Image 1 (tube, rainbow over the protein chains, first blue to last red):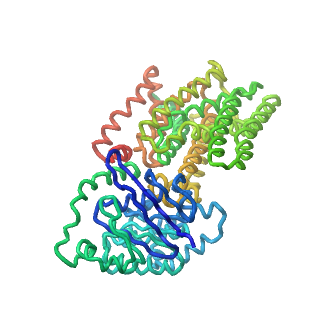
Image 2 (cartoon, chains in turn red, blue):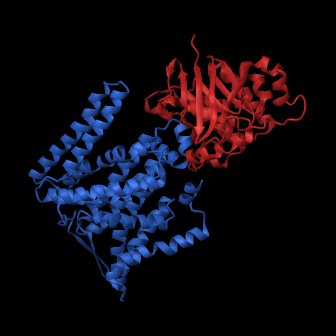
Image 3 (cartoon, rainbow over the protein chains, first blue to last red):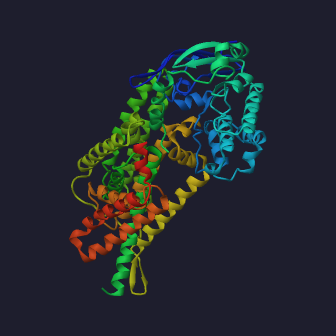
Length: 265
Length: 348
């Protein structure tokens, strides 16, 4: 069985600043792979490049095919979905419209399943069903994350990429979201999870990569990483203070800039 | 100024204002979905009006050549990209849509010019000629630059405007045309004699607006267009193709332009370069409405029509000056009083 995602020597730069220097990464089918690392290590950039939002060099093979030249919407059609850190919801549309638009390509291709999917998403997130007629902009942080996740599920992803799904959420909601992510793996969805909450991420992941200043510095099974003293010290907060890398600051600036180009509202 | 003059000016202002309102909606729609300030919107108006005029005088509208040439350019672009992606199977479809389609429409227009058709049939031919120009223009001029800044897209718009109005001079000549009204009837309402054409203009504008509203509120594609306007990244992540929403926005813009041209041509003599002035007034209306809300844009454009009508009575020579000068205080007030969404985009 071939790997679902194979990324080799991926490089991204913002002007003169290199954000990723040759990252390689694998996602096996039906597994959760997590990428942990400090702020500004290039985690969001990595997902953006795999999704096609950012220009990159190197190869990205998805389901055996090189998708490096495909536009974002074709990657979505192939089952590659990203739930971005900023959620990127349609604030002035209702919850239900946000979800329906997640299945836009499937409806256009004439697939019948989109209506069933809506039912499944509502079953998974009863909260969204309660708020189906509400505008997305009026939702709370946790509900917004559920909606972003639900919208991605409407596209029937085979590889779901999640960028900081726990960011800014209450611990109980974080637990819910992580439980749902683990359940999704049972339904055959592979997951690439970027998290700052390394403990939680390694808790549900099968494999992990540690990204620092644009490079993979460690990789291995989730259990190995959790047991690695360096990981424990830097990311799990077991020893010493949590002074996270010194190289982040230089990397921090490029991020908001690119968002400015990509985002309109 | 007596009361019946006021009423007459109001009626006149509402008639032209309704057309400006349609154009304001088209400009706002294109801007929201694609961030393009669509200067060539007016060319659809003049092309439609002059094509209808030529059909009524029994000539084949020169628009057919623009349509055929535009289709050929797109066929070459699309063909090259299909071959580059090694999908030669798509070539047949490309030839059918972009070469055979325009030729068929051209043949229809030629046939229509030779036979004395009814006004509605002529309008349908005009729509078939003008509406495809919208997506063709989008494919040729804008889509290769989809990620460019608002300013670059605006410069492209200026270029497209000059090319289209230059072509307009070549194919239609410098003479203005006026077409037959839908109905010559006049209704006496109190002191007013309301022309049936005015009623048609107001009614057709209203129908277009309701149709647009239904499209945006009740169809998935309409919602996809709104979603793209609300959050471009979100729309791409949801798999809504930017090229598709752009093309649809341009189809709608061209259709609205064609409708405006057909409606205004019995009221005003249209020249090859009249479109710019008409669509600029729609643009002023959209700006008065803040470039953000469709109802406000329509109201703003209606206001432009009324102001124009009254200023042509008081200071006929200065009517354009008055309308365009209006932008300055409004922009000043808006920039002081509120956050301006269009400016915010640039700054972010």
